[in-house]
Amino acid sequence: MNIFKENASVGLETQHAVRPDKKPAQNFFMKAWKFLLFLTVFICYIGSMAVAKGNESTKEYLENTGMPTQEIEALDYDVRQFIVDDLRGSGKNDWKINTDILALTKTDAEQNRVVFYINVYAFQKDSEHRIYAVYESSTEIMPTGNDKLFLCLGDSFVPYEYGGQIWYKKAGDGGWTEGGGLTANGQLSGGGTFVGRQLGDFRRKMLVKGCAYCYAHEGDGDDSRVTVDYTYHPPRERSEAGVYILIVAVTAFIVMVLRRKE
Figure: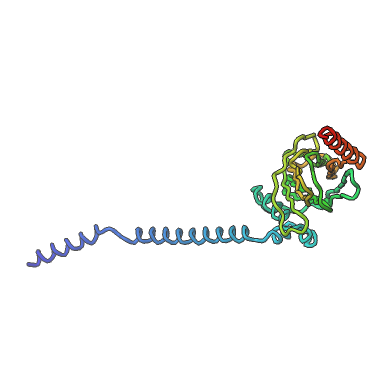
Protein backbone atom coordinates (compact mmCIF):
# COMPACT_ATOMS: atom_id res chain seq x y z
CA MET A 1 0.00 0.00 0.00
CA ASN A 2 2.82 2.39 0.76
CA ILE A 3 4.55 1.35 -2.43
CA PHE A 4 1.48 2.40 -4.44
CA LYS A 5 1.37 5.82 -2.78
CA GLU A 6 5.07 6.31 -3.36
CA ASN A 7 4.68 5.35 -7.05
CA ALA A 8 1.72 7.69 -7.42
CA SER A 9 3.69 10.48 -5.81
CA VAL A 10 6.61 9.90 -8.13
CA GLY A 11 4.26 9.91 -11.14
CA LEU A 12 2.75 13.24 -10.15
CA GLU A 13 6.16 14.75 -9.63
CA THR A 14 7.23 13.49 -13.07
CA GLN A 15 4.16 14.99 -14.77
CA HIS A 16 4.76 18.30 -13.03
CA ALA A 17 8.38 18.30 -14.10
CA VAL A 18 7.65 17.85 -17.83
CA ARG A 19 4.75 20.41 -17.96
CA PRO A 20 5.80 23.22 -20.35
CA ASP A 21 6.27 26.69 -18.86
CA LYS A 22 3.82 29.24 -20.36
CA LYS A 23 5.47 32.35 -18.93
CA PRO A 24 8.09 32.86 -21.73
CA ALA A 25 5.36 32.73 -24.38
CA GLN A 26 3.14 35.11 -22.42
CA ASN A 27 6.03 37.55 -22.02
CA PHE A 28 6.76 37.43 -25.77
CA PHE A 29 3.16 38.18 -26.74
CA MET A 30 2.96 40.95 -24.14
CA LYS A 31 6.09 42.62 -25.51
CA ALA A 32 4.86 42.24 -29.08
CA TRP A 33 1.50 43.79 -28.19
CA LYS A 34 3.18 46.74 -26.46
CA PHE A 35 5.45 47.26 -29.46
CA LEU A 36 2.52 47.26 -31.89
CA LEU A 37 0.62 49.67 -29.65
CA PHE A 38 3.61 52.03 -29.54
CA LEU A 39 4.09 51.76 -33.31
CA THR A 40 0.41 52.57 -33.94
CA VAL A 41 0.52 55.63 -31.69
CA PHE A 42 3.74 56.81 -33.34
CA ILE A 43 2.32 56.44 -36.86
CA CYS A 44 -0.86 58.28 -35.88
CA TYR A 45 1.22 61.10 -34.40
CA ILE A 46 3.36 61.44 -37.52
CA GLY A 47 0.26 61.35 -39.70
CA SER A 48 -1.48 64.04 -37.66
CA MET A 49 1.62 66.23 -37.83
CA ALA A 50 1.77 65.81 -41.62
CA VAL A 51 -1.92 66.66 -41.99
CA ALA A 52 -1.53 69.71 -39.77
CA LYS A 53 1.47 70.87 -41.79
CA GLY A 54 -0.38 70.31 -45.05
CA ASN A 55 -3.40 72.23 -43.78
CA GLU A 56 -1.44 75.30 -42.71
CA SER A 57 -2.47 78.41 -44.60
CA THR A 58 -0.38 79.85 -47.39
CA LYS A 59 0.33 82.86 -45.19
CA GLU A 60 1.60 80.65 -42.35
CA TYR A 61 3.72 78.67 -44.79
CA LEU A 62 5.40 81.78 -46.18
CA GLU A 63 5.83 83.22 -42.70
CA ASN A 64 7.77 80.08 -41.75
CA THR A 65 10.16 80.79 -44.64
CA GLY A 66 11.00 84.14 -43.08
CA MET A 67 9.13 86.17 -45.68
CA PRO A 68 7.99 89.53 -44.24
CA THR A 69 4.28 89.74 -43.45
CA GLN A 70 3.93 92.93 -45.48
CA GLU A 71 5.24 91.21 -48.62
CA ILE A 72 3.00 88.19 -48.04
CA GLU A 73 -0.10 90.34 -47.73
CA ALA A 74 0.88 92.24 -50.89
CA LEU A 75 0.60 89.00 -52.88
CA ASP A 76 -2.91 88.25 -54.05
CA TYR A 77 -4.47 84.87 -53.40
CA ASP A 78 -3.77 83.24 -56.78
CA VAL A 79 -0.06 84.03 -56.90
CA ARG A 80 0.45 83.20 -53.23
CA GLN A 81 -1.24 79.82 -53.66
CA PHE A 82 0.78 79.08 -56.80
CA ILE A 83 4.11 79.78 -55.11
CA VAL A 84 3.26 77.75 -51.99
CA ASP A 85 1.97 74.80 -54.04
CA ASP A 86 5.16 74.86 -56.10
CA LEU A 87 7.40 74.91 -53.03
CA ARG A 88 5.39 72.14 -51.36
CA GLY A 89 5.56 70.05 -54.51
CA SER A 90 9.35 70.22 -54.56
CA GLY A 91 9.61 67.38 -52.04
CA LYS A 92 11.80 69.59 -49.84
CA ASN A 93 10.83 71.18 -46.53
CA ASP A 94 12.04 74.25 -44.69
CA TRP A 95 12.52 76.60 -47.66
CA LYS A 96 13.85 79.98 -46.53
CA ILE A 97 13.41 83.36 -48.16
CA ASN A 98 16.58 84.62 -49.84
CA THR A 99 16.99 88.35 -49.35
CA ASP A 100 20.49 88.53 -50.83
CA ILE A 101 19.31 88.78 -54.44
CA LEU A 102 19.33 92.08 -56.34
CA ALA A 103 16.16 92.39 -58.42
CA LEU A 104 16.29 94.49 -61.59
CA THR A 105 12.96 94.98 -63.34
CA LYS A 106 12.06 96.78 -66.53
CA THR A 107 8.99 97.30 -68.70
CA ASP A 108 9.15 98.09 -72.41
CA ALA A 109 5.90 99.28 -73.91
CA GLU A 110 5.07 101.07 -77.14
CA GLN A 111 2.48 103.03 -75.19
CA ASN A 112 3.94 104.79 -72.16
CA ARG A 113 0.68 104.77 -70.27
CA VAL A 114 0.95 100.99 -69.79
CA VAL A 115 3.37 99.65 -67.19
CA PHE A 116 3.78 96.38 -65.33
CA TYR A 117 4.24 96.03 -61.60
CA ILE A 118 7.02 93.46 -61.21
CA ASN A 119 8.32 91.83 -58.00
CA VAL A 120 10.86 89.06 -57.50
CA TYR A 121 10.81 86.49 -54.68
CA ALA A 122 13.57 83.94 -54.09
CA PHE A 123 13.66 80.90 -51.80
CA GLN A 124 16.54 78.64 -50.88
CA LYS A 125 16.98 75.15 -49.45
CA ASP A 126 20.61 74.09 -49.13
CA SER A 127 22.06 74.49 -52.66
CA GLU A 128 18.66 74.66 -54.37
CA HIS A 129 17.01 77.94 -55.37
CA ARG A 130 13.50 78.76 -56.60
CA ILE A 131 12.94 82.25 -58.00
CA TYR A 132 9.54 83.71 -58.87
CA ALA A 133 8.95 86.81 -61.00
CA VAL A 134 5.44 88.17 -60.38
CA TYR A 135 4.00 90.78 -62.75
CA GLU A 136 0.67 92.55 -63.25
CA SER A 137 -0.47 95.13 -65.80
CA SER A 138 -1.31 98.56 -64.41
CA THR A 139 -4.33 98.85 -66.68
CA GLU A 140 -6.24 96.78 -69.22
CA ILE A 141 -4.13 95.63 -72.14
CA MET A 142 -4.70 93.52 -75.22
CA PRO A 143 -1.76 91.19 -75.86
CA THR A 144 -1.77 89.90 -79.43
CA GLY A 145 0.69 87.04 -79.06
CA ASN A 146 3.76 89.23 -79.56
CA ASP A 147 4.72 90.01 -75.95
CA LYS A 148 8.00 88.85 -74.42
CA LEU A 149 9.14 88.12 -70.86
CA PHE A 150 12.85 87.73 -70.16
CA LEU A 151 14.12 86.24 -66.87
CA CYS A 152 17.89 86.33 -66.36
CA LEU A 153 20.00 85.18 -63.37
CA GLY A 154 23.53 86.10 -62.34
CA ASP A 155 26.38 83.60 -62.14
CA SER A 156 25.69 82.76 -58.49
CA PHE A 157 22.84 80.64 -59.90
CA VAL A 158 22.78 77.82 -62.44
CA PRO A 159 19.25 77.70 -63.94
CA TYR A 160 17.90 74.36 -65.07
CA GLU A 161 14.11 74.69 -65.36
CA TYR A 162 11.57 77.40 -66.19
CA GLY A 163 7.78 77.60 -65.98
CA GLY A 164 4.90 79.65 -64.68
CA GLN A 165 1.22 80.57 -64.85
CA ILE A 166 -0.90 83.51 -66.05
CA TRP A 167 -4.31 84.87 -65.02
CA TYR A 168 -6.61 87.48 -66.55
CA LYS A 169 -9.87 89.30 -65.89
CA LYS A 170 -12.00 92.17 -67.08
CA ALA A 171 -11.74 95.34 -65.01
CA GLY A 172 -14.46 95.37 -62.38
CA ASP A 173 -14.78 91.59 -62.23
CA GLY A 174 -14.32 89.89 -58.89
CA GLY A 175 -11.96 86.97 -59.38
CA TRP A 176 -9.21 86.15 -61.82
CA THR A 177 -9.52 83.46 -64.49
CA GLU A 178 -6.64 81.01 -64.74
CA GLY A 179 -4.98 81.03 -68.14
CA GLY A 180 -2.39 78.66 -69.52
CA GLY A 181 0.96 77.66 -68.15
CA LEU A 182 4.24 79.29 -69.13
CA THR A 183 7.13 77.52 -70.81
CA ALA A 184 10.45 79.10 -71.75
CA ASN A 185 10.72 79.19 -75.54
CA GLY A 186 14.43 79.87 -75.42
CA GLN A 187 17.09 79.25 -72.79
CA LEU A 188 20.55 80.76 -72.49
CA SER A 189 23.25 79.88 -70.00
CA GLY A 190 21.82 82.32 -67.47
CA GLY A 191 18.28 83.08 -68.53
CA GLY A 192 15.05 82.07 -70.21
CA THR A 193 12.65 83.85 -72.57
CA PHE A 194 8.86 83.47 -72.66
CA VAL A 195 7.26 84.69 -75.88
CA GLY A 196 4.12 84.29 -77.96
CA ARG A 197 0.49 83.57 -77.24
CA GLN A 198 1.21 81.97 -73.87
CA LEU A 199 1.54 85.52 -72.47
CA GLY A 200 -1.91 86.40 -73.77
CA ASP A 201 -3.78 86.60 -77.04
CA PHE A 202 -7.05 88.45 -76.46
CA ARG A 203 -9.60 90.14 -78.70
CA ARG A 204 -10.50 92.67 -76.04
CA LYS A 205 -8.60 94.49 -73.34
CA MET A 206 -8.01 92.61 -70.10
CA LEU A 207 -6.08 92.95 -66.86
CA VAL A 208 -3.22 90.44 -66.97
CA LYS A 209 -0.94 89.02 -64.30
CA GLY A 210 1.51 86.15 -64.19
CA CYS A 211 4.15 84.32 -62.20
CA ALA A 212 7.21 83.00 -64.03
CA TYR A 213 9.62 80.80 -62.09
CA CYS A 214 13.13 79.48 -62.44
CA TYR A 215 14.73 76.55 -60.62
CA ALA A 216 18.47 76.86 -60.12
CA HIS A 217 21.42 75.19 -58.45
CA GLU A 218 24.07 77.05 -56.48
CA GLY A 219 26.59 78.75 -58.78
CA ASP A 220 30.26 79.52 -58.17
CA GLY A 221 30.01 83.25 -58.91
CA ASP A 222 29.08 86.23 -56.76
CA ASP A 223 26.55 87.90 -59.09
CA SER A 224 23.16 87.54 -57.38
CA ARG A 225 21.21 89.76 -59.78
CA VAL A 226 17.81 88.66 -61.07
CA THR A 227 16.69 90.63 -64.13
CA VAL A 228 13.08 90.64 -65.31
CA ASP A 229 12.17 92.44 -68.54
CA TYR A 230 8.60 92.52 -69.90
CA THR A 231 7.99 93.83 -73.42
CA TYR A 232 4.42 94.67 -74.39
CA HIS A 233 3.39 94.93 -78.04
CA PRO A 234 -0.18 96.26 -78.26
CA PRO A 235 -2.25 95.82 -81.42
CA ARG A 236 -1.58 98.40 -84.10
CA GLU A 237 -4.17 101.14 -84.09
CA ARG A 238 -5.56 102.30 -87.38
CA SER A 239 -4.53 105.86 -88.15
CA GLU A 240 -7.15 108.55 -88.66
CA ALA A 241 -5.89 109.11 -92.19
CA GLY A 242 -6.38 105.46 -93.03
CA VAL A 243 -9.91 105.48 -91.68
CA TYR A 244 -10.69 108.66 -93.66
CA ILE A 245 -9.37 107.12 -96.89
CA LEU A 246 -11.44 103.99 -96.27
CA ILE A 247 -14.61 106.05 -95.75
CA VAL A 248 -13.99 108.08 -98.92
CA ALA A 249 -13.35 104.92 -100.97
CA VAL A 250 -16.53 103.23 -99.75
CA THR A 251 -18.57 106.39 -100.42
CA ALA A 252 -17.18 106.71 -103.95
CA PHE A 253 -17.96 103.06 -104.66
CA ILE A 254 -21.57 103.49 -103.52
CA VAL A 255 -22.00 106.62 -105.67
CA MET A 256 -20.70 104.80 -108.76
CA VAL A 257 -23.09 101.89 -108.20
CA LEU A 258 -26.05 104.25 -107.85
CA ARG A 259 -25.16 106.15 -111.01
CA ARG A 260 -24.96 102.96 -113.04
CA LYS A 261 -28.43 101.98 -111.92
CA GLU A 262 -29.75 105.33 -113.12
